[in-house]
Length: 359
Ligand SMILES: Nc1nc2c(ncn2[C@@H]2O[C@H](COP(=O)(O)OP(=O)(O)OP(=O)(O)O)[C@@H](O)[C@H]2O)c(=O)[nH]1
Image (cartoon, rainbow, N blue to C red; front, side):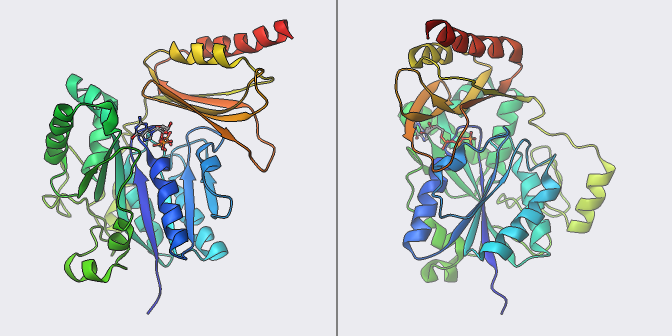
């Protein structure tokens, strides 16, 4: 029998905790003596999340675009190369937080027709605080995207529950159950799940495999975990082609202009020419407009010799000391909607000017 490589897709809105889950999953596989590999997709042109992945884990990067549209065609090729060059035991595909997972499901299942790989799960990590805010407004493109990501999950991780009350948690769980009644859901802080879940998903947990079929089908078509979806049924929630055979998918992709629910997302990447003051940077970030909901970067500060990986998600800032093996740029990537890149660029440049004046 041909051995296939299990593939897990990690989906979820920007900053929801995908990389936090990924690093734990990678450690889990490696401790079990297995070789995981990663395909990471970032909207910006630098792979900052990759800094958090151990150097020994084979990783391929698809930068400056979203797999689900501009670079979807490359996905199959990248997966094939990863398998050919590294013979991994499992592959994780981490999507950009702006990706519509239906498109990526299509991409992976297309690729699995040509290579020995098998899509095992689509795990959506939900940012509880973000979803709560969007849910209370009840509209908006980001809300719609988060719903799509939830609807098509075969496994749901409701993360960042430390940022919401237990009453709100209940409200969210009920809302999520309406959108996706079947996928197993776990409420977490920092994505702390029972990692044995991957044995169940891969079908290597003998107790579970006897009872539980793999949730994602892969024989020429894909399916959302919602059993109400059938292969010819297109509803508003999953208006894409995930329920059709590949031939039909190709046809539909040609026939219809695609609507991407993340068309509204903007990215600004700033390369710093010199180190900046940490307090002034924190001050700038604390005043970022609400339209900028995600930022990350590698920063050199004038007041410390250490290098920092910077994270900003849902108005929370985080700085982690890093010691990269290679030369890395000083860079920050900002992601959001309808914000002024010009103003942001000027504000960031001003930090550098202050540093120049002071030195
Ligand atoms: N308060 C809180 N912060 C969390 C939790 N989980 C993750 N974070 C923080 O949220 C930030 C974003 O986490 P990531 O794991 O990088 O999120 P991501 O989904 O990979 O982000 P993108 O790749 O940009 O879409 C980091 O600073 C994490 O430390 C949580 O449960 N609670």
